[in-house]
Image 1 (cartoon, rainbow, N blue to C red):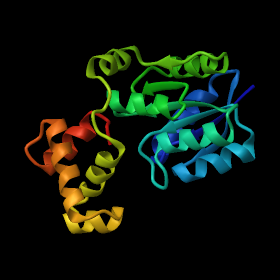
Image 2 (cartoon, rainbow, N blue to C red; image 1 turned 180 degrees about the vertical axis):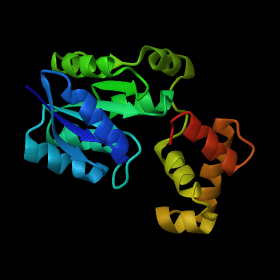
Image 3 (cartoon, rainbow, N blue to C red; image 1 turned 180 degrees about the horizontal axis):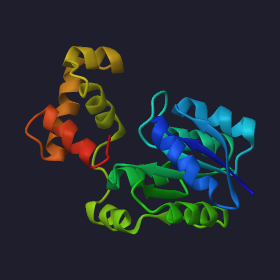
Length: 201
C-alpha cells in the first residue's frame, strides 16, 4: 500500500482529492495538511511514501515544502499540484527536487498514475507545461531581484524594502530598475504582475 500525504489549504479540494485517491486499491491517504509548515512533521510522523503538495499554502509554499522534504526525507517522493500552470513554477519545482508537476484539472487517474510512476523512479510532468517551460526559458531575475520584487508586491516603499532586506535605498532602486527592464514592464507593479504570471516569484 502506497502511503500518501496530501497538503492543500482549501479543505474542500483536499477532501475531494483524498476521496478520489481512496478509490484506488493501492493508495492510502494517511496524512493531510492545510499548511506548508505542517508537511515535514506530518511526513515524518506518518512515514509517507509520497507527498502531494499544493503550491499556494500558508506557512510555507509547496515549493519550499518540497525542498525541505528533499533535504530531510530524501526517500519521500513529491508531486506538486497547482491551479497555476506557469512555466516558472515548473522550473522552480524541479530545482526544489519535485518528482512530478501536475495541474489540478488533470484527470484523477493521471494523478494516481503519477504517484505510482514517481515511486518507480520516474519524473512526471504535465506535457503542455513542459513545452511552455522550454519555450519560455529560465527566469532572468537574480535571487536578489526576485526578493526585492516580492517585497515590493505588498506595496512597500523603497525605504521599507531597504529596511526589510537590509539594503540601502539606492541599491533597492537599482534592483527594481533592473527587474523592471528584465520583465519588459513599465513600472514595479507591472513587473510584479509579469513575474507572477510567469511563475518567477
